[in-house]
Length: 89
Image (cartoon, rainbow, N blue to C red; front, side, top):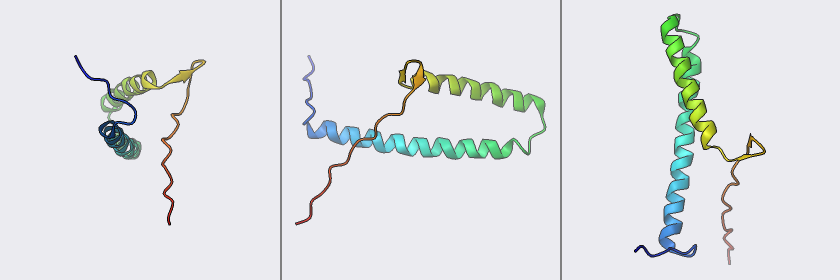
């Protein structure tokens, strides 16, 4: 039997912060890779390479679309986690 963790559990908060930092890092890396792919499209003239890349990107787009939360069939952005403001004394 596993113990349930409450929202106030410090370990859960640390894990959430690590997950959020990883998500931000991965989004940045993905955007950079997409820019690189976009730049390379101007240089590649091989039809089979271009078709393979397109097929791969279509699979990626489908997987990412499936992972989005949707409302009335449209993807909606996730609300960013609000940071607690620090009060200086």
